[in-house]
Image 1 (cartoon, rainbow, N blue to C red):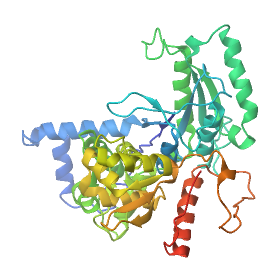
Image 2: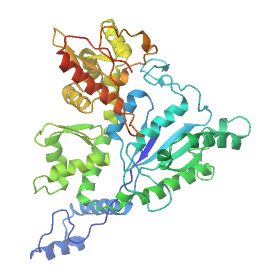
Image 3: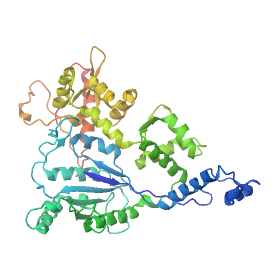
Image 4: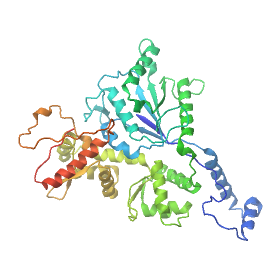
Length: 455
């Protein structure tokens, strides 16, 4: 699990940096200011609105940094999706269960609705707990920035904090158990990984969340460390138009009310224009790119496509994509064979997509969701049935082929191996390479042969 805290900088509005641009004063400006400064001259029905607006402005200007927390699950399917959402401007907390041995086989558990939690197989089903930790570090390292912190907190961005949990469940002498974990973990990390680490903490789960007087001191230290890191991040010092932050606040308000997505033209007319002057060509696209980079929205549409999807609740999108490409075990008999194909061979039938979209009540944006998944190479088209229904390959659902030697290579050319002359290859690259190779192979064979894929 990784928790992401995205620090936000809220600069105070300076002269010449107003929402409506640099405009010269008019003879009416003095009268307007006099009315604002002297509430007695305002109509009675306006006074409460002005007071509420001024309080809101002060709250935005004074708050400074606030956290946006993401809790990332660890299954292989989630790791394929995480790179879409992970930000290089974050502080990452990598949480480890200290009761688990590093070199024991890791167990991946999934809880389906109305079913008991079960252990699921995946491309990494033979991984140890240490392997899972390394995969997380791998993902964070793929976001490495050229900037570095101005202090000795860490050498590479984004920073990572290691947190060991369940100290209260450790057997024997807890200090030796804790030091044993960190001593084994440190040499396992490459120098590139170690450069991201800022500190490590051990948490007593029985005390976490208690009142201040009873709270675990390590939790307090962890909280202070996160704040210290956030204040050191380079993007904290960047100035941001106040109007953009007002848009961000409106997005948060709407998403909290259950409005998870909206068409691009509606977002522009009903949200952006309410707070921003979009006078120059490209102003709106610049705002969208800023909000996407912040993790406030997910937007990958074309500039000229007014019907592009603007997702105002990115965590909702993560859940929707996962439910589509993993497809819960269906109750209806007619879908069960299709589900076995997905589980065993990574082949996703459009019927399962339709059923998942129906269950999540997102049928009307099904095509946009498929476009998002194709854009990020999470899925790729395979073939179309006589009834017009498509099948897709889902690389992150491929299972490990335990006995590679049993594959019949007598009728195929010599295998091709792809190697890298670098010390680092991002883990999320595998799924995307499989998709690209599949597209290439399909074009070469013109769909005459059925290819076989395995992890």
